[in-house]
Length: 357
Image (cartoon, rainbow, N blue to C red; front, side, top):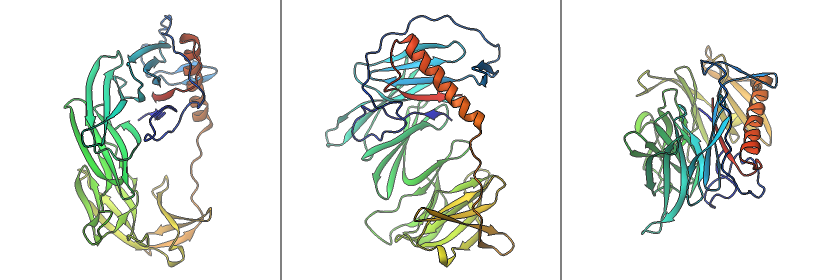
């Protein structure tokens, strides 16, 4: 959806820091100066030529101190979209480039729990909602937009459970999901492993969930499922017991309505890789693998549909990032940096960035 810089260097202690532009001291931010609009194309999806590289049109939000700025590549204009009295964190731009969600500090509630304050505004700074919630775990991992109306916050609760908070900015509804290994399907549905009670054995079976609905149940108490991998309508995941002993791998079909996973094959884990860190993997052609890692070494086992077994093989080749993709990313960041320096008279230090192409 977007390339998102998370939480600035000065965020509270229970925020996880990722993708800071810099860790150096921030400087005073002045209001942006006026710039001339540049009309480049009638179709915003058309390409732009910058430093010899054809760049797609993009928008970005930049968060620093108590301000959030909005940048539009077609106009090359950087405007102050949000200004608060207190510091703000983790401004994230929605996929349709119409809204910005951000953290606006936190307070203590009457029960002693943190109350997190989330605000949403349009790109002109007009408020679109304020959401206060507790039950948010011990730290915020990250946040992103599932689609143009749902904003998702991933928070850590304990070693067994994360809390995924989904805020619908249209209905103002807040829904919380409890589990681990969250991923998002193409339509925005949230796929995750259901919560297993951290302290009590023999209470719950390992389950795969989509939006609070059980779509696959292992039938095994305390079983833990890995992060599912997906290729087309196929899912692959590894099932272990509570002591991290691998039990078997499952290949299944996800229904079009996303309400059930039909088990296609249940494949035993080869004895020689028991005790290693195992990861399911689909290659670009739909081939299914188990990657076993131990002591910085990796071995691979591919699924043979004829024998219905995992057989040792060469490590699958991961597609390297295309050089043009890297050049595009570098050029986009260079353009944003130039806008900060020339329009805000500021250094590029201390900003968190969220980009939507």
